[in-house]
Length: 158
Ligand SMILES: CC(C)(COP(=O)(O)OP(=O)(O)OC[C@H]1O[C@@H](n2cnc3c(N)ncnc32)[C@H](O)[C@@H]1OP(=O)(O)O)[C@@H](O)C(=O)NCCC(=O)NCCS
Image 1 (cartoon, protein in one colour):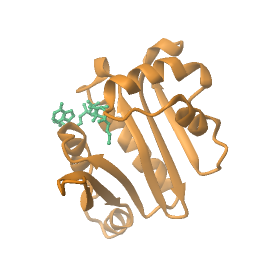
Image 2 (cartoon, rainbow, N blue to C red):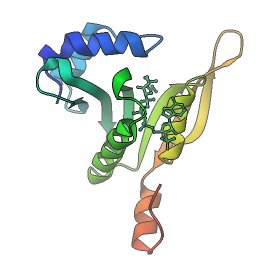
Image 3 (cartoon, rainbow, N blue to C red):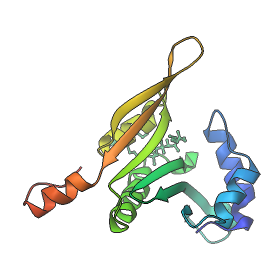
Image 4 (cartoon, protein in one colour):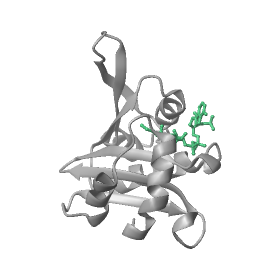
């Protein structure tokens, strides 16, 4: 779970990772968890607030998890951490009875799209900029299908 003392490091990672970084207020709202469906997890590489390697914010409503923010700090990228953290979210969603996991990703963010496609997400829609250029993709991974494949003896690996 994220703690307020992690905020300075999280904001530094956020501003160097995203075109439109979240504000401290946005993170505080997720961390304080004023809504029961909010979750923010932090991966620490070492003790203390300086050791944050990754974080994820997600909401879950009834049968769906929506990932709002998914970030791996630059020094920790391309080591499998993103894949591992995403697997944890998918596992959590399945354990909580969700049918699907959804997120929005910028259409030019090929590292993130590669991560999500590799985990079994599929593009289900897109929003366009003012000039009509695709701006972001809505991507979804169904979990119920995997459950039925498991129960019918199929290969559930994504
Ligand atoms: C996208 C991001 C989370 C990936 O995290 P990561 O820990 O580097 O990812 P992993 O090492 O687990 O890689 C998993 C897969 O992602 C894809 N990927 C990750 N980085 C990539 C890159 N630089 N170029 C191409 N594909 C990449 C690959 O498919 C990779 O699988 P592979 O190693 O078998 O090729 C990370 O780059 C990041 O935080 N970027 C900035 C913030 C961001 O864009 N977040 C997503 C917003 S929707």
